[in-house]
Amino acid sequence: ATERMFGYPAGELVGRNVKILMPPPFCDQCDEYLARYLRTGEARIIGIGRELVGRRKDGTIFPIDLAVSEIDHLQLFTGMIRDISERRLLEEQLLNIAEAEQHRIGEDLHDDVGQELAGLALTVDTLTEALEAAESPDAELSRTVGQRVAVLSRKVRYLSHGLVPVEVDAAGLMAGLEVLAANVSEAGGPAGTFHCPEPVLVEDTRIATQLYRIAQEAVTNAVRHAKAKTIEIALERTGSGLVLSVRDNGVGVSQESVGDQGMGLRAMRHRCGMLNGRFTIAQASGGGTLVTCEVPLVPRATPHERD
Image (cartoon, rainbow, N blue to C red):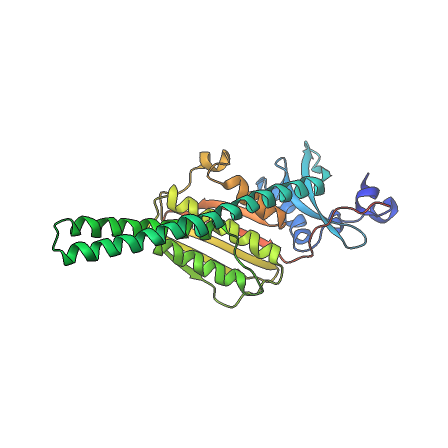
């Protein structure tokens, strides 16, 4: 089974370090995890299981599920590896279907509801001017209606922009995240800021789109559930990939909410997993929540090509 999955004959694998079956940066972490466990007893993979990336002899990579167990008292370990390419492909298809429907709803909100509200706003403005000219006591009520229509129009515009995927080119992710932060503030929500110390150009539109969606979901959670006053979105390039983080100063995240996969956490984890990334959500220093997605810039995982 190992020969079929990885393309190595057994003779080339026996006696080699298992990290030969993983690309950077994952292979660099393999020895570290085992050494730390033997030294401290802290389990990060042992007995837990984790989704990683495998590398075949021909260099192609693919998503795997790795479960490592310890043989008691012998300091020996067994590893069970499962090719999850088909599962990831199905997850991606489901997300694409959901995004297509979101795109349709977003366009309907913008083109239909948004235009109707714009027309209503003009009508109310005209009515207000006429009532003011007639010195009618109803002019104040008309102005109030106009203000409420304007607020509703901004909310609909914010919702429609959120449902339509960000337009991405090499610099599109930076622009999209900056607009996302600005829209939060414009919609009357928390103060949103975007930090990107150096330009980060993402040529792969798939990576850019998924990272944007993760940030969007994290921001939505902060606005709706965390009661945050500030939201900080950050993007930076590291030696081996990209790091996206969203920090808020809200009520924080409980271990129960992380464990039950609520508040859109499942979707964020799946999106990060599709990019072979590492997703974490934890209490931020000083209070609030910190969502982080670390994505390695390695070739896209591909299903195994059979003869």
